[in-house]
Image (cartoon, one colour):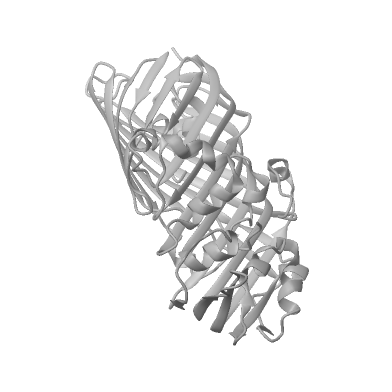
Length: 455
Protein backbone atom coordinates (compact mmCIF):
# COMPACT_ATOMS: atom_id res chain seq x y z
CA UNK A 1 0.00 0.00 0.00
CA UNK A 2 1.26 3.47 -0.87
CA UNK A 3 1.53 6.08 1.87
CA UNK A 4 1.85 9.84 1.71
CA UNK A 5 3.99 9.56 4.83
CA UNK A 6 6.43 6.84 3.89
CA UNK A 7 6.86 6.36 0.17
CA UNK A 8 7.94 9.92 -0.47
CA UNK A 9 11.33 8.70 -1.61
CA UNK A 10 11.65 5.01 -0.72
CA UNK A 11 9.59 3.78 -3.65
CA UNK A 12 12.62 4.00 -5.91
CA UNK A 13 15.15 2.41 -3.57
CA UNK A 14 15.58 -1.31 -3.18
CA UNK A 15 18.48 -0.45 -0.83
CA UNK A 16 16.78 -0.63 2.49
CA UNK A 17 19.45 -0.33 4.90
CA UNK A 18 23.54 6.63 8.33
CA UNK A 19 23.84 9.50 10.22
CA UNK A 20 27.57 8.91 10.68
CA UNK A 21 29.49 8.54 7.46
CA UNK A 22 31.53 5.29 7.10
CA UNK A 23 31.48 4.51 10.86
CA UNK A 24 34.89 3.30 11.99
CA UNK A 25 36.61 3.53 8.63
CA UNK A 26 36.30 7.34 8.61
CA UNK A 27 38.96 7.42 11.38
CA UNK A 28 41.57 5.61 9.27
CA UNK A 29 44.83 7.25 8.25
CA UNK A 30 44.58 5.24 5.04
CA UNK A 31 41.13 6.17 3.75
CA UNK A 32 42.64 8.39 1.05
CA UNK A 33 40.29 10.74 -0.77
CA UNK A 34 37.35 9.55 1.38
CA UNK A 35 38.86 11.44 4.32
CA UNK A 36 38.14 14.69 2.48
CA UNK A 37 34.37 14.21 2.93
CA UNK A 38 34.62 14.35 6.74
CA UNK A 39 37.38 17.00 6.87
CA UNK A 40 38.73 18.79 3.77
CA UNK A 41 42.05 19.44 5.54
CA UNK A 42 42.84 15.78 4.80
CA UNK A 43 43.57 16.82 1.20
CA UNK A 44 47.02 18.13 2.20
CA UNK A 45 50.00 16.02 3.32
CA UNK A 46 47.96 12.86 2.95
CA UNK A 47 49.55 9.42 3.11
CA UNK A 48 49.09 9.18 -0.67
CA UNK A 49 50.69 10.88 -3.66
CA UNK A 50 47.39 10.18 -5.37
CA UNK A 51 44.29 8.22 -4.47
CA UNK A 52 41.14 7.19 -6.34
CA UNK A 53 37.80 6.18 -4.87
CA UNK A 54 36.29 3.89 -7.49
CA UNK A 55 32.95 3.49 -5.70
CA UNK A 56 31.57 3.51 -2.18
CA UNK A 57 28.05 3.14 -0.89
CA UNK A 58 26.53 3.62 2.55
CA UNK A 59 22.90 3.02 3.44
CA UNK A 60 21.13 3.14 6.79
CA UNK A 61 17.85 3.45 8.66
CA UNK A 62 17.24 4.34 12.30
CA UNK A 63 14.16 4.79 14.49
CA UNK A 64 13.86 5.65 18.16
CA UNK A 65 11.11 3.00 18.54
CA UNK A 66 12.37 0.26 16.21
CA UNK A 67 14.25 -2.95 16.95
CA UNK A 68 16.61 -4.46 14.41
CA UNK A 69 18.32 -7.83 14.59
CA UNK A 70 20.44 -9.92 12.25
CA UNK A 71 17.61 -12.40 11.84
CA UNK A 72 15.25 -9.81 10.36
CA UNK A 73 17.60 -7.53 8.43
CA UNK A 74 16.78 -9.32 5.19
CA UNK A 75 13.13 -8.30 5.65
CA UNK A 76 14.13 -4.68 4.99
CA UNK A 77 14.40 -5.42 1.28
CA UNK A 78 10.60 -5.47 1.37
CA UNK A 79 9.02 -2.03 1.10
CA UNK A 80 6.31 -2.75 3.69
CA UNK A 81 8.85 -3.91 6.27
CA UNK A 82 10.90 -0.80 5.65
CA UNK A 83 7.81 1.35 6.19
CA UNK A 84 7.16 -0.48 9.48
CA UNK A 85 10.67 0.34 10.68
CA UNK A 86 10.27 4.00 9.74
CA UNK A 87 7.08 4.14 11.80
CA UNK A 88 8.32 2.05 14.73
CA UNK A 89 6.06 1.02 17.59
CA UNK A 90 2.54 2.15 16.75
CA UNK A 91 1.84 3.11 20.36
CA UNK A 92 4.54 5.80 20.47
CA UNK A 93 5.57 8.97 18.66
CA UNK A 94 8.33 8.09 16.22
CA UNK A 95 11.39 9.86 14.88
CA UNK A 96 13.24 8.19 12.04
CA UNK A 97 16.08 8.77 9.59
CA UNK A 98 16.78 7.01 6.31
CA UNK A 99 19.90 7.75 4.30
CA UNK A 100 21.67 6.57 1.17
CA UNK A 101 25.10 7.95 0.28
CA UNK A 102 26.71 7.03 -3.05
CA UNK A 103 30.26 8.20 -3.83
CA UNK A 104 31.25 7.43 -7.42
CA UNK A 105 34.63 8.36 -8.87
CA UNK A 106 36.68 10.78 -6.72
CA UNK A 107 40.38 11.67 -7.03
CA UNK A 108 42.98 13.07 -4.61
CA UNK A 109 46.33 14.46 -5.81
CA UNK A 110 49.18 15.64 -3.61
CA UNK A 111 50.66 18.71 -5.31
CA UNK A 112 53.72 19.04 -3.08
CA UNK A 113 54.78 18.70 0.57
CA UNK A 114 52.36 21.41 1.63
CA UNK A 115 49.27 21.22 -0.57
CA UNK A 116 46.85 18.85 -2.24
CA UNK A 117 43.61 18.94 -4.21
CA UNK A 118 40.65 16.60 -4.62
CA UNK A 119 37.78 16.33 -7.06
CA UNK A 120 34.83 14.51 -5.51
CA UNK A 121 31.38 13.35 -6.64
CA UNK A 122 28.51 12.21 -4.47
CA UNK A 123 24.79 11.36 -4.55
CA UNK A 124 22.67 11.54 -1.39
CA UNK A 125 19.15 10.75 -0.22
CA UNK A 126 17.82 11.73 3.21
CA UNK A 127 14.39 11.12 4.74
CA UNK A 128 13.36 12.38 8.16
CA UNK A 129 10.18 11.35 9.95
CA UNK A 130 9.54 13.56 12.98
CA UNK A 131 7.03 13.19 15.80
CA UNK A 132 4.78 10.81 13.86
CA UNK A 133 1.87 9.36 15.75
CA UNK A 134 2.68 5.70 15.23
CA UNK A 135 -0.92 4.47 15.27
CA UNK A 136 -2.08 7.02 12.69
CA UNK A 137 0.90 6.34 10.42
CA UNK A 138 0.42 2.58 10.60
CA UNK A 139 -3.25 2.88 9.65
CA UNK A 140 -2.30 4.87 6.55
CA UNK A 141 0.65 2.66 5.62
CA UNK A 142 -0.47 -0.83 6.64
CA UNK A 143 -4.07 -1.96 6.93
CA UNK A 144 -2.94 -5.13 8.75
CA UNK A 145 -2.11 -3.14 11.89
CA UNK A 146 -4.24 -4.25 14.86
CA UNK A 147 -4.50 -1.25 17.14
CA UNK A 148 -7.21 -0.79 19.75
CA UNK A 149 -10.06 1.58 18.86
CA UNK A 150 -11.31 4.16 19.39
CA UNK A 151 -7.91 5.87 19.56
CA UNK A 152 -7.50 9.57 20.40
CA UNK A 153 -4.85 11.81 18.85
CA UNK A 154 -3.96 15.00 20.72
CA UNK A 155 -0.77 16.33 19.16
CA UNK A 156 0.71 19.71 20.03
CA UNK A 157 3.60 19.26 17.59
CA UNK A 158 4.10 19.07 13.86
CA UNK A 159 4.13 15.57 12.39
CA UNK A 160 6.52 15.64 9.46
CA UNK A 161 8.06 13.54 6.75
CA UNK A 162 10.74 15.25 4.70
CA UNK A 163 12.78 13.81 1.83
CA UNK A 164 15.57 15.29 -0.24
CA UNK A 165 17.65 13.73 -3.03
CA UNK A 166 20.60 15.56 -4.53
CA UNK A 167 24.08 15.16 -6.01
CA UNK A 168 27.30 17.07 -5.40
CA UNK A 169 30.49 17.86 -7.28
CA UNK A 170 33.23 19.17 -4.99
CA UNK A 171 36.64 20.75 -5.45
CA UNK A 172 38.87 20.62 -2.38
CA UNK A 173 42.11 22.41 -1.59
CA UNK A 174 44.22 21.63 1.47
CA UNK A 175 47.31 23.47 2.69
CA UNK A 176 49.84 23.06 5.51
CA UNK A 177 49.75 26.18 7.68
CA UNK A 178 52.45 25.16 10.14
CA UNK A 179 55.10 22.44 10.18
CA UNK A 180 57.45 23.48 12.96
CA UNK A 181 59.08 20.95 15.25
CA UNK A 182 56.44 19.12 17.27
CA UNK A 183 53.51 21.13 15.97
CA UNK A 184 51.72 20.67 12.66
CA UNK A 185 48.57 22.41 11.40
CA UNK A 186 46.75 22.05 8.09
CA UNK A 187 43.50 23.46 6.77
CA UNK A 188 41.18 22.77 3.86
CA UNK A 189 38.07 23.95 2.09
CA UNK A 190 35.67 22.24 -0.28
CA UNK A 191 33.49 24.21 -2.68
CA UNK A 192 30.47 22.20 -3.87
CA UNK A 193 28.07 22.53 -6.75
CA UNK A 194 24.72 21.05 -5.72
CA UNK A 195 22.18 19.54 -8.11
CA UNK A 196 18.80 18.91 -6.52
CA UNK A 197 16.87 15.97 -7.95
CA UNK A 198 13.78 15.99 -5.72
CA UNK A 199 12.33 17.37 -2.51
CA UNK A 200 9.06 16.41 -0.87
CA UNK A 201 7.44 17.03 2.49
CA UNK A 202 4.25 16.50 4.48
CA UNK A 203 3.53 18.57 7.58
CA UNK A 204 0.50 17.97 9.84
CA UNK A 205 0.11 20.71 12.44
CA UNK A 206 -1.51 20.15 15.86
CA UNK A 207 -3.84 17.34 14.89
CA UNK A 208 -6.69 16.56 17.27
CA UNK A 209 -8.78 13.59 16.17
CA UNK A 210 -10.27 10.19 16.94
CA UNK A 211 -9.58 6.99 15.02
CA UNK A 212 -12.61 4.69 14.87
CA UNK A 213 -12.98 1.28 13.24
CA UNK A 214 -16.01 0.04 11.32
CA UNK A 215 -16.87 -3.37 12.91
CA UNK A 216 -18.16 -4.74 9.58
CA UNK A 217 -15.49 -3.64 7.08
CA UNK A 218 -12.62 -3.16 9.59
CA UNK A 219 -11.86 0.15 7.85
CA UNK A 220 -10.42 2.85 10.12
CA UNK A 221 -11.75 6.41 9.91
CA UNK A 222 -10.35 9.76 11.00
CA UNK A 223 -13.18 11.52 12.86
CA UNK A 224 -13.76 14.77 14.77
CA UNK A 225 -10.46 16.07 13.42
CA UNK A 226 -9.02 19.58 13.58
CA UNK A 227 -5.61 20.83 12.51
CA UNK A 228 -3.85 21.77 9.31
CA UNK A 229 -1.91 20.01 6.57
CA UNK A 230 0.71 21.15 4.08
CA UNK A 231 2.39 19.08 1.41
CA UNK A 232 4.88 20.01 -1.26
CA UNK A 233 6.95 18.41 -4.00
CA UNK A 234 9.65 19.69 -6.32
CA UNK A 235 11.91 18.14 -8.92
CA UNK A 236 11.36 14.74 -10.51
CA UNK A 237 8.25 12.64 -9.89
CA UNK A 238 8.56 10.61 -6.71
CA UNK A 239 6.11 7.84 -7.58
CA UNK A 240 8.70 6.12 -9.78
CA UNK A 241 11.93 7.62 -8.45
CA UNK A 242 15.13 5.60 -8.87
CA UNK A 243 18.79 6.18 -8.07
CA UNK A 244 19.65 7.15 -11.66
CA UNK A 245 17.60 10.34 -11.20
CA UNK A 246 20.08 11.63 -8.62
CA UNK A 247 21.88 13.12 -11.63
CA UNK A 248 18.79 15.09 -12.68
CA UNK A 249 19.71 18.76 -12.51
CA UNK A 250 16.21 19.98 -11.62
CA UNK A 251 17.43 22.53 -9.07
CA UNK A 252 20.82 23.99 -8.21
CA UNK A 253 22.73 25.45 -5.32
CA UNK A 254 26.16 25.86 -3.79
CA UNK A 255 27.73 24.51 -0.63
CA UNK A 256 30.98 24.24 1.27
CA UNK A 257 32.93 22.24 3.87
CA UNK A 258 35.64 23.78 6.08
CA UNK A 259 38.27 21.88 8.05
CA UNK A 260 41.28 22.26 10.33
CA UNK A 261 43.65 19.59 11.71
CA UNK A 262 46.34 19.86 14.38
CA UNK A 263 48.90 17.15 15.04
CA UNK A 264 51.35 16.80 17.92
CA UNK A 265 54.49 15.09 16.67
CA UNK A 266 56.84 14.59 19.63
CA UNK A 267 59.73 13.33 17.51
CA UNK A 268 59.34 15.98 14.81
CA UNK A 269 58.46 13.33 12.19
CA UNK A 270 55.35 12.68 10.11
CA UNK A 271 54.05 10.30 12.79
CA UNK A 272 51.74 11.98 15.26
CA UNK A 273 51.00 11.03 18.83
CA UNK A 274 47.86 13.17 19.05
CA UNK A 275 45.64 14.57 16.28
CA UNK A 276 42.74 17.01 16.65
CA UNK A 277 40.29 17.68 13.82
CA UNK A 278 37.55 20.28 13.51
CA UNK A 279 35.23 20.52 10.49
CA UNK A 280 32.08 22.34 9.50
CA UNK A 281 30.31 20.30 6.83
CA UNK A 282 27.27 20.77 4.59
CA UNK A 283 27.03 24.52 4.52
CA UNK A 284 24.73 25.72 1.73
CA UNK A 285 21.30 25.21 0.21
CA UNK A 286 19.45 24.15 -2.94
CA UNK A 287 16.74 26.31 -4.50
CA UNK A 288 13.68 24.41 -5.70
CA UNK A 289 10.67 25.46 -7.73
CA UNK A 290 7.55 23.94 -6.20
CA UNK A 291 5.36 21.67 -8.30
CA UNK A 292 2.07 23.51 -7.77
CA UNK A 293 0.01 20.65 -9.20
CA UNK A 294 1.14 18.41 -6.32
CA UNK A 295 1.46 20.97 -3.51
CA UNK A 296 -0.94 22.81 -1.24
CA UNK A 297 -2.12 23.73 2.23
CA UNK A 298 -5.37 22.67 3.92
CA UNK A 299 -7.39 23.12 7.08
CA UNK A 300 -8.56 19.75 8.41
CA UNK A 301 -12.13 19.31 9.66
CA UNK A 302 -13.75 15.88 9.72
CA UNK A 303 -16.98 14.86 11.44
CA UNK A 304 -18.86 11.54 11.32
CA UNK A 305 -18.52 9.54 9.17
CA UNK A 306 -14.87 10.46 8.87
CA UNK A 307 -12.08 10.02 6.35
CA UNK A 308 -11.26 6.44 5.28
CA UNK A 309 -7.51 6.14 6.00
CA UNK A 310 -7.06 3.11 3.75
CA UNK A 311 -8.45 5.10 0.85
CA UNK A 312 -6.07 7.96 1.63
CA UNK A 313 -3.09 5.62 1.92
CA UNK A 314 -3.76 4.09 -1.50
CA UNK A 315 -3.23 7.40 -3.31
CA UNK A 316 -0.05 7.77 -5.40
CA UNK A 317 2.03 10.75 -4.31
CA UNK A 318 1.36 12.67 -7.52
CA UNK A 319 -2.41 12.28 -6.97
CA UNK A 320 -2.61 13.32 -3.31
CA UNK A 321 -3.48 16.97 -3.98
CA UNK A 322 -6.22 15.96 -6.43
CA UNK A 323 -7.61 13.59 -3.80
CA UNK A 324 -7.61 16.26 -1.07
CA UNK A 325 -9.19 18.82 -3.40
CA UNK A 326 -11.97 16.29 -4.05
CA UNK A 327 -12.81 16.14 -0.32
CA UNK A 328 -13.89 19.73 0.47
CA UNK A 329 -15.96 18.49 3.40
CA UNK A 330 -12.71 17.30 5.02
CA UNK A 331 -10.03 19.65 3.64
CA UNK A 332 -10.42 23.40 3.08
CA UNK A 333 -7.64 24.94 0.92
CA UNK A 334 -5.53 27.63 2.60
CA UNK A 335 -2.33 29.47 1.83
CA UNK A 336 0.91 27.48 1.86
CA UNK A 337 4.56 28.51 1.48
CA UNK A 338 5.76 30.26 -1.70
CA UNK A 339 6.38 28.87 -5.16
CA UNK A 340 10.18 28.86 -4.71
CA UNK A 341 11.98 27.72 -1.60
CA UNK A 342 15.55 26.99 -0.51
CA UNK A 343 16.33 23.68 1.17
CA UNK A 344 19.25 23.91 3.60
CA UNK A 345 21.84 21.16 3.75
CA UNK A 346 22.06 19.23 7.06
CA UNK A 347 24.93 21.28 8.51
CA UNK A 348 27.11 19.53 11.10
CA UNK A 349 30.02 20.49 13.36
CA UNK A 350 32.50 17.60 13.59
CA UNK A 351 35.24 17.25 16.19
CA UNK A 352 37.76 14.38 16.30
CA UNK A 353 40.54 13.49 18.69
CA UNK A 354 42.84 10.67 17.60
CA UNK A 355 45.49 9.19 19.91
CA UNK A 356 48.19 6.70 19.03
CA UNK A 357 48.40 4.24 21.91
CA UNK A 358 51.30 2.14 20.67
CA UNK A 359 52.55 0.63 17.45
CA UNK A 360 49.55 0.25 15.12
CA UNK A 361 46.92 0.69 17.85
CA UNK A 362 44.87 3.90 17.96
CA UNK A 363 41.77 5.21 19.68
CA UNK A 364 39.51 7.91 18.27
CA UNK A 365 36.84 10.02 19.92
CA UNK A 366 34.40 12.00 17.77
CA UNK A 367 31.35 14.20 18.15
CA UNK A 368 28.96 15.24 15.39
CA UNK A 369 26.70 18.11 16.35
CA UNK A 370 23.60 19.16 14.42
CA UNK A 371 23.71 22.88 13.57
CA UNK A 372 20.52 22.82 11.50
CA UNK A 373 18.10 22.93 14.45
CA UNK A 374 17.22 26.56 13.75
CA UNK A 375 15.74 25.48 10.41
CA UNK A 376 13.60 22.67 11.82
CA UNK A 377 10.53 24.93 11.70
CA UNK A 378 10.77 24.58 7.91
CA UNK A 379 9.11 21.34 6.93
CA UNK A 380 11.22 20.86 3.80
CA UNK A 381 14.64 20.73 5.55
CA UNK A 382 16.45 17.55 6.61
CA UNK A 383 18.63 17.11 9.69
CA UNK A 384 21.02 14.59 11.19
CA UNK A 385 21.16 13.79 14.91
CA UNK A 386 23.88 14.49 17.46
CA UNK A 387 26.20 11.55 17.99
CA UNK A 388 29.26 10.64 20.06
CA UNK A 389 31.63 7.86 18.99
CA UNK A 390 34.66 6.09 20.42
CA UNK A 391 36.57 3.90 17.94
CA UNK A 392 39.54 1.70 18.87
CA UNK A 393 41.39 0.48 15.79
CA UNK A 394 44.38 -1.46 14.55
CA UNK A 395 45.72 -0.44 11.16
CA UNK A 396 48.60 -0.74 8.75
CA UNK A 397 48.86 0.34 5.12
CA UNK A 398 47.29 -2.93 3.96
CA UNK A 399 44.93 -3.80 6.81
CA UNK A 400 42.63 -2.12 9.29
CA UNK A 401 40.14 -3.30 11.93
CA UNK A 402 37.75 -0.77 13.50
CA UNK A 403 35.17 -1.09 16.30
CA UNK A 404 32.97 2.06 16.49
CA UNK A 405 30.91 2.51 19.68
CA UNK A 406 28.31 5.23 19.10
CA UNK A 407 25.67 6.97 21.15
CA UNK A 408 23.12 8.77 18.96
CA UNK A 409 20.32 11.08 20.06
CA UNK A 410 18.04 9.06 17.76
CA UNK A 411 19.08 5.42 18.21
CA UNK A 412 21.01 5.53 21.51
CA UNK A 413 23.88 3.02 21.91
CA UNK A 414 25.20 0.94 19.01
CA UNK A 415 28.36 -1.08 18.44
CA UNK A 416 29.70 -1.84 15.00
CA UNK A 417 32.69 -3.21 13.14
CA UNK A 418 34.56 -2.36 9.95
CA UNK A 419 37.53 -3.81 8.10
CA UNK A 420 39.94 -2.64 5.41
CA UNK A 421 41.83 -5.19 3.35
CA UNK A 422 44.01 -3.63 0.67
CA UNK A 423 41.73 -1.49 -1.54
CA UNK A 424 38.50 -3.00 -0.15
CA UNK A 425 36.60 -1.78 2.89
CA UNK A 426 33.22 -2.61 4.43
CA UNK A 427 31.45 -2.36 7.71
CA UNK A 428 28.46 -1.35 9.81
CA UNK A 429 27.94 0.97 12.74
CA UNK A 430 25.42 -1.38 14.37
CA UNK A 431 26.28 -4.96 13.37
CA UNK A 432 27.46 -6.03 16.84
CA UNK A 433 24.38 -4.60 18.56
CA UNK A 434 22.12 -6.24 15.98
CA UNK A 435 23.56 -9.64 16.93
CA UNK A 436 21.63 -9.30 20.19
CA UNK A 437 18.44 -7.85 18.57
CA UNK A 438 18.97 -4.62 20.49
CA UNK A 439 19.74 -2.14 17.72
CA UNK A 440 17.49 0.77 16.77
CA UNK A 441 19.31 1.16 13.50
CA UNK A 442 20.51 -0.92 10.57
CA UNK A 443 23.33 0.29 8.36
CA UNK A 444 25.99 -1.01 6.03
CA UNK A 445 28.73 0.41 3.81
CA UNK A 446 31.32 -0.93 1.39
CA UNK A 447 33.66 0.39 -1.25
CA UNK A 448 36.89 0.12 -3.20
CA UNK A 449 39.66 2.70 -3.47
CA UNK A 450 43.34 2.57 -4.36
CA UNK A 451 46.34 4.90 -4.49
CA UNK A 452 50.09 5.38 -4.48
CA UNK A 453 51.72 5.88 -1.10
CA UNK A 454 53.75 9.03 -0.45
CA UNK A 455 57.37 8.54 0.57
